[in-house]
Amino acid sequence: MTEGAPKGLEPKGFDLTTLLAERGAERYELHTRYLNHQLPRMLHTIGFDNVYERAEGAHFWDADGNDYLDMLAGFGVMGLGRHHPVVRKALHDVLDASLADLTRFDCQPLPGLLAEKLLAHSPHLDRVFFGNSGTEAVETALKFARYATGKPRILYCSHAFHGLTTGSLSVNGEDGFRDGFAPLLPDTAIAMGDLAALERELKRGDVAGFVVEPIQGKGVLESPPGFLRAAQELLRRHKALLIADEVQTGLGRTGDFYAYQHEEGVEPDLVCVAKSLSGGYVPVSATLGKDWIFKKVYSSMDRVLVHSASFGSNAQAMAAGLAVLSVMEDEETVAHARATGELLKSRLAALIPRYELLHDVRGRGLMIGIEFGRPTSLKLRSRWTMLQAARKGLFAQMVVVPLLQKHRILTQVSGDHLEVIKLIPPLVVDEADVDRFVEAFTAVMEDAHGGGGLMWDFGRTLVKQAVANR
Image 1 (cartoon, one colour):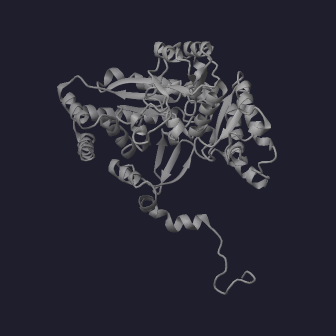
Image 2 (image 1 turned 90 degrees about the vertical axis):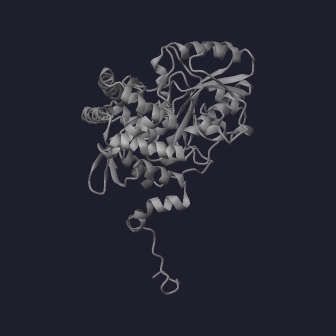
Image 3 (image 1 turned 120 degrees about the horizontal axis):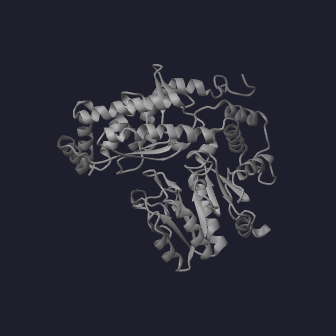
């Protein structure tokens, strides 16, 4: 008993294992009551309300010991898979070190070491700002571009996704995310690849920069060949900046360290990364930029904190990032992602002539889009038309559900109202995982083209749900 404590009120401490054992079964009820109540409702509706007990690498397991293949990677966060031993050890080590972290009035070594390691992969860039999330990395780039150029407006691409905080939402090309949150910043969308539109906006003289995903997450749409290089030349001519959003595409996802590196001669002024840098543990983001931009933003001691983040550069995040980059080098993760992605993409593309509902397979590395489209046969066409009339995107949802329920493979559609599934698995998936996915996907396509069975029954359920939500 602690001295001075009333009898019967001895401190009991905190035991996470006990808490999860006692309350873990309430997960969906707790979420419904205290968090986003629509999430459990959606999961129940589409049959994604599984309970997973543990995870490792590209797999996780339920309470019955069933193995699931993860082809989603937490929307790209789990680049090295779950619980990589090197990242785990780094986090144990940094906690055990009891560092004097976040004093705000010293310079710890870990942020400088991580910046140095990141910049080694980005030789045309000079400095780094560390934040906590992808949207914060984009917000940083927007602020820096505006201040460095003295101009107010940012250009972005239609259908882009750059985040959901107010600044990044202003350059989000999807109306579904923007609706109801106006007024936003006065930024302007152009179509991906439309150089004429880019030049027309630049000629107005008020553009600070152009932010672009080299491969758009929504729909997995690549920038056209030569577009980034030509855009860069236009921007430089008009004294505006090229901002590459590599939050999802960066750190090996597309088979190169950055996706913009697939196009020779492209050297963005600012680059945003996040997701995989975390190792799946500690939120971290980085905005990399040229020396002159940082020196203009932080132009004097009076401006030393003009842009900062409360938890930016914290020791745990920096340790995770350093461990991730070390693993990527030691395990040659980028080359592995390139080779495994090419294998997966080629095997899926080979199925296109076989299935009329399968229209395209595209992407780079382990960022692959599978697009479905209108079939030619009368029976399938009538069913397709029924789904499209209710809500575009229902067929893709019809595919991801049996992949999970029958084959224990987690995937998801690449965006609302799109008939596209996006595969962004952990970069550690191997040939056996590719075999498993292709076999399962082939089985689902066989069922869909068979014209009956549980898949189309589920389709009718989705149609009723879509109509009810109108």
